[in-house]
Every structure is written in C-alpha cells, then in structure tokens.
Length: 298
Image 1: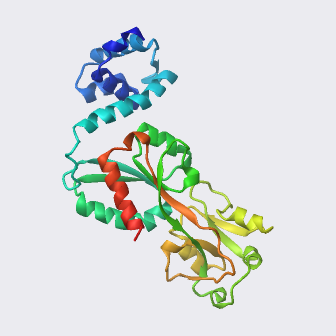
Image 2 (image 1 turned 135 degrees about the vertical axis):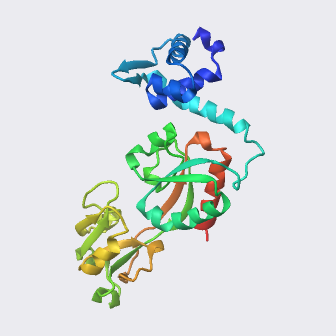
C-alpha cells in the first residue's frame, strides 16, 4: 500500500458509495461525475490497496472481502469528518436529517408513541423511518449504516454493539376478560403449564415462547397451542378463545383481557436501545437516546 499517502477524502467517498450502490453509473450520477472519472478513481484505489476491491457480475460491482472490511473503517472516518462541522452547532429544533430505527412490535406499542411525540415537538425537521426488527440482521445493518438505533432485548445484540438499559419489563399472565380463571385463587406454575397457551413469536414462526426455559427449570412443559407474530392481535384472540398468555405489563390494561393471579411470577427482562460504535459521539444519536431514557424512566 505504497500509495496510501495519495489517498484523499474524495476517493473514500467514492469507495463508500460503490459499497452502497454496487453500480458505477449510479455512483457517477449521485456524485455529479462521469462514469469514466469514477472508473479512474477505482483504478487508483485498486493500486493503493493492491486489491481488485470490486468484481463485475452482470450489472453489479460485487465487493471483495477487503472492500467490505475497508467499508466499516471508511464509514467511521467519514462520520468523524462530518462531525467536525457539527461541533457546538447542534440544536434539535433546527436539525435536519433521517434516522432509521429498528423496533420490535413490543417497542412500537410500548415506547414509540411517547418517544415520537417528543421528537416531533422538539425536532420537527428530523425524519424518522421505523423498520421491522430482524434479529439475525441487526449487527450487519447497524454496521452498514442501514440502521441508526434498535429498540430490542440484550440476547439479540452482537457483542461488539454498544447498548443502554432503558427499563425492566415483566410479563403478566392474562386470559379473556370473560374467563373464570381471572377470578380464582392464585394458580401454581404446574396448573398454568397445563392450560392452553398462546405465545408471541415475532422473529420465527414456531410454537416456542420466551419463558419455556423457566417452566423447564421447574420440570414443566408448557401446553402451547398457538403462536402469533405480534402482541397487537393477542388481546382479540385471547378474548375469543380459552387460551392464556404472558403479556407485557406496559401494554396493560386492555379491556379484552384480565390478569390471572399466579403464586410465582416469571423473571423480568431488559428492554434496551442499541447503536453502532461509530455513532457513539453523534449529537443527534445521543439526543435521541437521552429522550428514550427520559420517557422510559418515568
């Protein structure tokens, strides 16, 4: 890499754009340059790094392993350079930009309404994109910059991704508001295990629930008979059936369901916000995280 001293910011931006677009002509159009100029810069980059960086496959430029490795470092460098112009100038009221947030269906109901109200009041020019939560893609999308923040749970976060605890949540056993189970003496865990149960499986369609291991530790197997992909429809289904479910406390009360008293409660779980290390000192990211802390601590 003898040509490293000749590397400039423009070339880094071109390499970053190629990693995002994987197409020379689109990068040229986006940057206001000719395709020939982009090709020439790519040639120089190949000399600097002694690597092809991109291999043409049809209409796409497929990055080599080295190009992908460089991409993460280049995004950090460009982010740091951009932050130089933001020092001492940040104001939510005037900030313009787009932030993408990945949120579980639980977070969409329990956190986002109050959070987004504050964002709209205090940062009216900020645009927010909320996407479905994909646990197996979380690390990759935060690294690539497709995601800025993720509202999730610790087990889904890769070891190299920083996160902050927002609050502890508790699942409450519920059934239809018409169920006689809601007006009985506290049930034992063995009695609960035998009842037909509904579980929420947002990431994988199966008949497995988050508290299966808790029951197993007591030598019990749950009678799970149905799963749904989100919490939103659970009260309606429970209201119309004989099933029970463990439902987040922050989503209660709900007129369709009522609480079943238990002699022991399931373990609590953490709700967190995660981000990529390169945005650790980003003022807009830190402002949004602070707002989340404020509303979740209330």
